[in-house]
Amino acid sequence: MPPSTFSPLARARLRSLLGGTLLLAHALCTHAATALPPEIEAALQRSRLPRDSVTLLVSEVQGQRPPRLALNPATPMNPASVTKLITTEAALELLGPAFSWQTPVYLDGPIREGTLQGNLVIKGQGDPKLVLERLWLLLRRVQGLGIRQISGDIVLDHSAFELPAVNPADFDGEPLKPYNAAADALLINFRSLVLTWVPDPAAGLARVQLDPPMAGVQFSPSVPLLAGECGDWRTQLKAQLADPNRLSFAGGYPASCGERSWPLAYAEPASYNARALEGLWKDMGGRLGGQVRDGLVPAGLQPVFSLASPPLAEVIRDINKYSNNVMAQQLFLTLSLQQKGLGTPAGSREVLSQWWRRRFGEADLPSLENGSGLSRDTRVSAQALTRLLQAAWAGGTMPELLSSLPLSGVDGTLRRLGKDNAAVQGAAHLKTGSLRDVTAVAGVVHGASGRRYTLVAMANHPNANALRPVIEALIAWTARDQNLP
Image 1 (tube, one colour):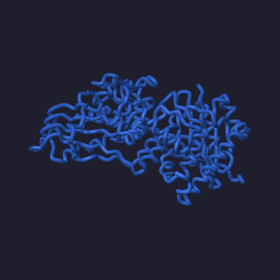
Image 2 (cartoon, one colour; image 1 turned 180 degrees about the vertical axis):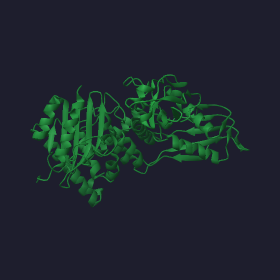
Image 3 (cartoon, one colour; image 1 turned 135 degrees about the vertical axis):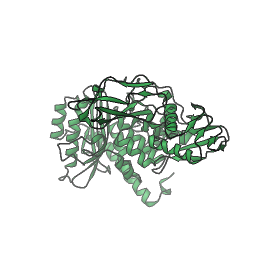
Image 4 (cartoon, helix red, strand yellow; image 1 turned 90 degrees about the vertical axis):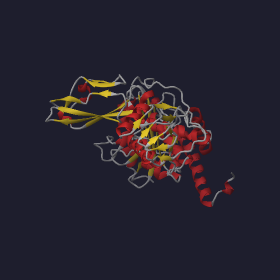
């Protein structure tokens, strides 16, 4: 489309963005070797990180001035969960902030005297937030149709995504960590369990609750109370969680801990959906004549209702504030589902690459494996992330993206940052990233002068965690900008 076809406001914004991009590119070439400010240099020296393992870049959000600070800005690095910035900004532009996922429900048979004479079919379409309370609402709506018993099966259709088989232990050998849950077109409650302990001092025990109720899973309903400090209470439980049919605890629970919860990935992911659905249906008073199984929606069958997810603008707050990997992967796969009719990793990589080329051209094209950053192979440069942030700032969905990022020293994954540094608290909206050998942040810093700055910092090194004091110093320095021209 030639520029003359844009509105005057759009042409002005385009000129501003193009001018800022050219100036940024020139500035990066000419300022990359500039000495760092003394306090940043000192923090970097204390970290003992080699300079070539670190990239730092601070620029104004409008991109119309040279960067305030640049170190190795063009070097591609593993950004870990900072990848979610790319996924969520692309989704806001391609899907829109009001986009919501639909989970349709079908009745394959008539209802007679409270009994569905056939199967109940649920088709997943990628909803990242079909959590326990929303699954309860879905089944409650089924009961609202007058159904108390299902004579056939509950059939689960996962066909909207086509995914390779995944072992949750493959990435880091921690299969019970919730962050290793795999994507699924019908992702129920992140395939996770929550165990809750409630002390009952009069009885000398802590009562144990399991959510969701899982069909065929036995667990200890209580454990003995222990004296002493709370400390490492999970270790004191001596939990045995590898058996998918039984959760047991050989130890006790410290009374001083009060009520605590422990989220876990289920040991047998393939059976999670069936156990959770059957357990919750029966817990709600429903009866099931058949079983819960995987299958497809029969041809020609129309849904009786569809459960809508929260809007995308709300979902990305969970993704970015708390760095939820499986939700990010659900969103990533939704990009190809919406454009191609089937959600696949290769299809979504293609959609994201095409979006990047349309938005920014070939320069600084990120190399992405998935949408979450739970990857050893993803690479992106600081200047690419800066271009993304500057374009997002100039776009119509800037408030949605910015409000989804953790606020330094306040919430999400940044709530502990700068706890003893008033200059850092509340000064920046930043997405964090952390893997073995990777520490990264990227986002926007709010200067004392009223100006706003993009900030990107990444380290790829066995001692990457040593970058954290550098990040804190960098935020404080960036925010302290009163004397700038």
